[in-house]
Image (cartoon, rainbow, N blue to C red):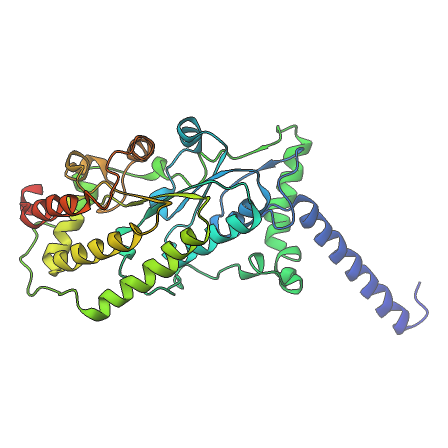
Length: 356
């Protein structure tokens, strides 16, 4: 068939090139991570990979409202947000995502979607003290090639056999089998309720008591400067640069068990001081509607609402949306000090060992 080795090599290379073109074409046409376009209207797309799919959702879907955050945001239902706030919402959570990661993705949403008007975002209380540039490096390799504008590193996507054989070919089979076209609903996307257990046993685990702190950790200038940089760079600057976008932000309501752990570590006063400083910084921005539900003691002191010290059930997410819409627990320059006084009085003096 081949007269010499050269022809055989050329034929083999041509075959390899053809296979590569076919592979890339299938992935580009289907595009399960929405890197090049939104979902096709003749296939079903499963949403199950936040850091690979969220960038494409942000860039190629139609919406005027977004819910973003860590795992604290994963149980929100966009249908409830749409019912309350109107418009069309997407949900793009980043489990474990830092303030920086969330802020960068909000900035992308504003850049690619000038119709964006509403952003709902929980500000994880435990991240207030973060370094402004922190990114999670403990969550596996990050798909940077999906986020940048470098077409050359797209080879990591279009020549990815796991995406071809693990996602695209099954999608083709589903289409052939008559599976209706569509996409995982944003109500269901990333929600973890089916695998969670709630209540004191889930929250407290093997702990039998909260011990007195060995020493208290002060709110020193170094920590204060870190809070300022983090909040300014990853919360305030973007809001000030986009006055037409309304940012509904709230400090996540952790359980009293979390506060008990902080009391044991001697960090309660430092957290309260950091929170006050962060609040004062954010209240200078008119289009940030800042809330805190830490004084909803019926919520935070009832461990039946929690699956661990921090994470609450989806019924709390639903309640939070209602509170955001109605203005319940909205912090203002006039009321925030009263809120802080009530909060400090409760969590400094709570009998944490009564939880046992």
